[in-house]
Image 1: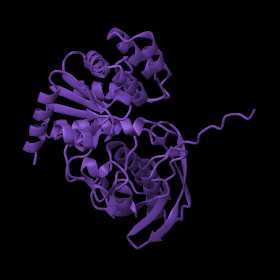
Image 2: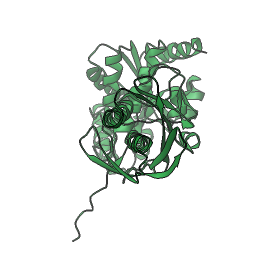
Image 3: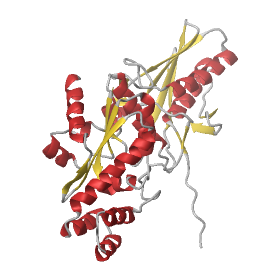
Image 4: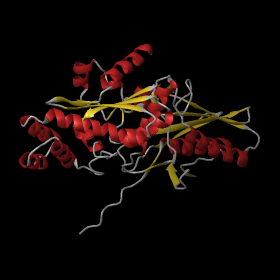
Length: 376
């Protein structure tokens, strides 16, 4: 039996920018050509970067490092991250974004509105690497650094940047400098960023959904644009923690039963690799509503939640079981939120529509729509 292949880590756009800036600064101040450079990432992992596409003028040097996300599926992998450096009369290092680096247009992000989306840790990395070069070769002077990413504007359309109000390109990001294969860190950070943005514009009501599944149902049943909700994917527990931490007054969770049934059993990461028990949870709710042994066995033998709920529909138990499960979702959300945030829930399945809604859900939908209307 062959050994399990170890997944390869990669390096963030922030690490690429810092390595390119260091190499360009050395070449500008020494006149030497640098085709390889090493930097140490915040995680302590050394990044040996190949320096590409070097160009010079009498006053500047520009070069690139190719982004490699390792075995993590990353749309920015393959892009060239460029740094162009110039001497400055002002002491210190000044950093700006160029073509292909997004511009922040909404509050609540790592950078203020009007700044390029080069996040704090990459800025610190670039500043540290360039400052060390200045201290070694030309103490007391300064340097201007421009980061650019050809193709960044097109690539950004495949990311969350347009939704977050970052226009014109990708973000230069990374807190550790290293991309962990198959890591969920980036998705969780996106959830946190989007919630911070909503609070920054004054939202007190958080609308959460695992995704856009059910867009048509919510539009038809409630006149509600599900696409405007913050997408929590499988990370409902982390999302609840951030909603409570940011001080939202109320939270609405809307979703398909395939995800939400797990929450009815207290499961706060709904990925199938983490937990399932959907049929057991549905079967337990059915028993509480009077289901007979044969019905329970059919539910336990079902492959999908839709199949399980079709069994309940045939025996007239769909409505009470659906409502009981929805109330249990609310119970566990309330526990995770610590009782400080009012929470309501709507659960549905594709073929059968609404399974249940908590008592204040419709009223909260109306409040959230009014909140969004005021922001136009």
